[in-house]
Image (cartoon, helix red, strand yellow):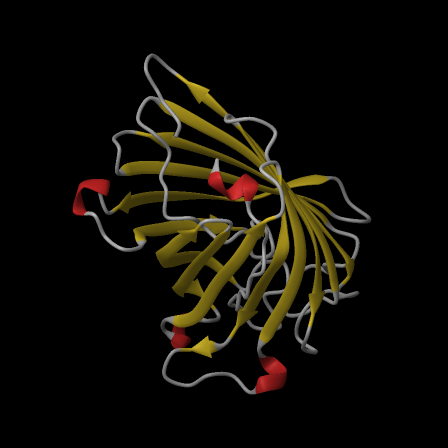
Length: 263
């Protein structure tokens, strides 16, 4: 997988307000490539806030010391269409392992036969999360994905639009949550770099700077083989509304069922 052999320098401006502090369940910039037909990709997204919020706010549990584990299962149906399903869970510092919610995410990409100068895909994600983990229980995310490989360099931009369907943020409409990544392959097996995540607020009325969320993640990607995915990073919050220190890891494996192939 190309994402495993890249040096990562990314800027992700992830989206939520200070009240939605428990939203870090999948920290990733998407590539445009979809899972091949006849293939199932299983990923574990793990992260913990070493320095985050320390008390319940607006009914949302603290983040500091909370361990988030997300199971993502993505099925490739054609060379240009996949469907992903997520199960979000959380282990709070003083409680048991809790189910947080589920999301489903269909995604399409521009076929290679179009011979575009960049990779291009679009996903739509809808799902539910418990009120104790988010001020919004039902949400919708639209994620355009544009990427490009230049020899050892790789760049991906995800200009995300998301909105609450039910919850405190419904009145905000769509919020702008851009994500971006640039990476460099140090060796055929090792890539290092940065990812950047943030939250700008409503599209027509951005939040004040201090209320936005911005995080910078130095990361490493390892190529463990054509069926594997591995990413590890440590993120630093850049604004008062952002968790100050998050450690994250992604581990994935690709299962092929009767003819599934991976480039």
